[in-house]
Image (tube, rainbow, N blue to C red):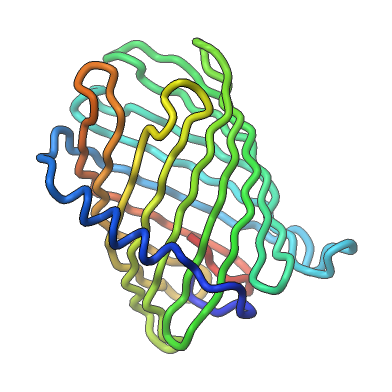
Length: 235
């Protein structure tokens, strides 16, 4: 996020980010991975009639690589509208399809419907976002709901092209798995001339594994964001 929106409610997320990241620091890493995101926010309306706020179409792809797959393990495509509702509130609705290797060279496909309200704001040179995502996951073995919460803090002076950031996300499955994953990332973003930004970060992921209890992964994560209008860039 490189510009301020209207002030919203304070984010409780940064404290959770710090505490969770400290909690993840102890276990040894078991699996390295590389994730590469591309996100496009395409302008649809400058002012949607019923909101009088910008409406965009989000198109996002996510490619994930790692030795346990091998090679390409996940390929995401996420598409849906994004409404900027004013007052530091954003609402998105997505459809997502995810081909993935469930085992080496064995592919399956997951489908998701996602509802995503996000709250954003600025305090001096700091910007924050608090994203809530409710997913309905349709998988070969069955369907269930998952809740995700991502809190992000950026050091984003208005005139600086560099944006250090940190974020933390929890993932809670609506089946017997319950709290199944935590992701914490620290990195730096760089605006690339107008509508583009590149984030490069190191993510530490704790995930529940059926075989070993909890597994821990170190992930190099790059994120390319392209927004060809004047709307704020959000994580």
